[in-house]
Length: 128
Image (cartoon, rainbow, N blue to C red; front, side, top):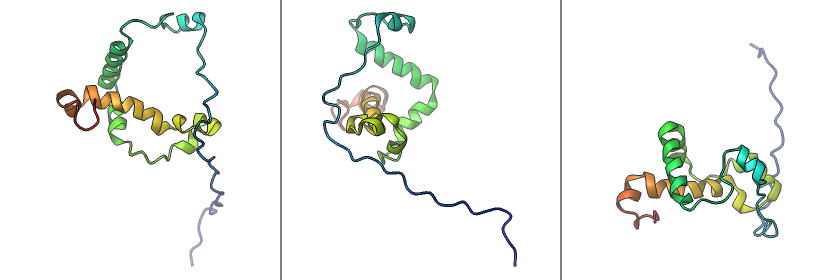
């Protein structure tokens, strides 16, 4: 009888994922970098007037440059498998910090401005 040329790895216990708690971060606000840091990164010191249009334009530029971004926008099925690896979600247990929730914000813009249905029929299918 043949024997294996390697040792069978031991199974590890499944990681414990904290329960989602609504409002876990309601007492906190986003950390805003100081003006010198913003300037060094090339960000404007104040919010520009047409920031929405510039953000949509930049997303279009990234979609044109990285095909993988478009594939990711179309392929994510909201399974939540990435949540146990996300340090923001693990640290806060806030459902708004789940990768699925964060990515869904980008996906709404993607669907509205960069898909056939969103461009031609924005009121249909939640693209508005």
